[in-house]
Image (cartoon, rainbow, N blue to C red; front, side):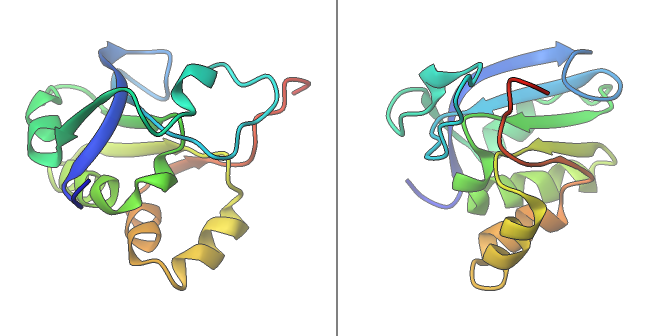
Length: 136
């Protein structure tokens, strides 16, 4: 997969359930964290979903939504393309919310050696971090 392609499991063009305001939600395919009780175990495998370019994803985002929410799977397992996408979403004046099973400390550590992680983290306005815990 090239750095401008995202493996997408599901898209909901308009939702009020995935963050503040009306949002465009993208569930990405692939997650190696595999939290017990995960709502989306069908998105764990790296295979499946469809490959979509950053350009095509950006074209699909309605201009009148508050922003985009990235969920998974695990967005930080596709940080290069999603970082570029998130920067372009923000350049349009929309916000980016990212759900991750990694903690912010883990992501900050990875960002030191992975430019894609640094880019997506920097382009995320609101991060919900840490592994899923069905008891919370």
